[in-house]
Structures are given as C-alpha cells and as structure tokens.
Length: 206
Image (cartoon, rainbow, N blue to C red):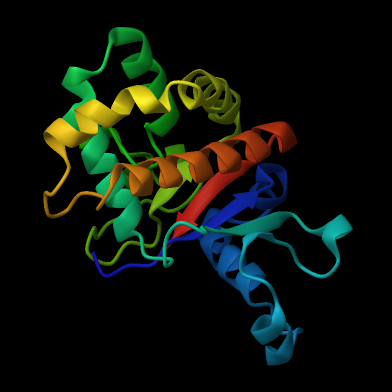
C-alpha cells in the first residue's frame, strides 16, 4: 500500500478541547515536537510505547510495532487474511475475532470504516483513500470490548493455524507465515489492552 502506520494511544478529553480540524495536526506535532532536538529522536528506543520526556503530562503515546517494519501493509494483509479464513472458524472464536479486529485492521463492511466519518466526527473524515489523513480511529468507549475480546482470542490462536494454511498460506497479499499473522494480532492485543486500561482511544496516521 506504500503507507506507514504511526499509531497513537491518545486522551480523547485532551483532543476534544481542540477544534476538530486541529486534532490530526496535534498528533503529528506530538510525534515530533519542535521543542525537542533531533538527538532525542535519534537516540530514543523504537520498541513498544514511546512517551514524551515528561510522561506525567503526556496526553498520548506512540506504539512501534516490533513485528513489522512500520508499514501499514502488514496490518492490511493480516486483516485480509482474517476475512479469508473467517468461514472456517467456529462461531464463538469468529465472533470474538470480529469484535477484536473490527475497526482496527478489518471491517465486516468497508463502508462502515470509522475513518470515512472521522470516527463519528471526532476527526475530519477521510476524503481520499489514496492519500488518507487517517488510517484508523478507535474511540475510547469501544476499547474495553476489544480488550475483553482479545482475552477470549489469545488462548485460542492456535485454532487459526489450519484455516490460515487452507486460505492464506502462500498467497500474495497475505502474511508470509502463520507466525507473522499471530505476531501482529498479539501486538494489537497489547495495544488495545493498554488503551482500555487508560480509557484512551487509538488513532492511526499514515
């Protein structure tokens, strides 16, 4: 897809105090604040959550996926893999996976993608899918449900191995291996659990 994913966990209350049209810009500025010099960014670890130096006053954190190179393509491929294998998965696991991945890296109906409406108007809507200002929006109120769904999914990931082999293995545009697929899922489990604990939302920028 040619896009990178920059994923933020953010305090919706802080963002709501800003004009809608300024919220994406505020996240971009938080990723690279002008008051910090280049040495900070060159030296900072790129593994998991990254906070601004003053963590106590920070209203957002960036998550660096360890299982990808930063490209959005890996997440889109995992979402497509789930779409392919869903019919082969039992109903309870399928329901939990749908609840977990929906609005993150997969949508039952692409027309329902929260990005198209800016997450219900909280952000400006995406008007150009080829040059989006947002890749995903997941508001705080849905994160507890996703965290609960992840707890149901996490212990049953091995049950997805055969459906993955049948529908995805060896196909272009899908994760290279089952381990690559589940590694992405596990990191999304980490992300949704942490955001739910804080009562914050998730925003993915290109």
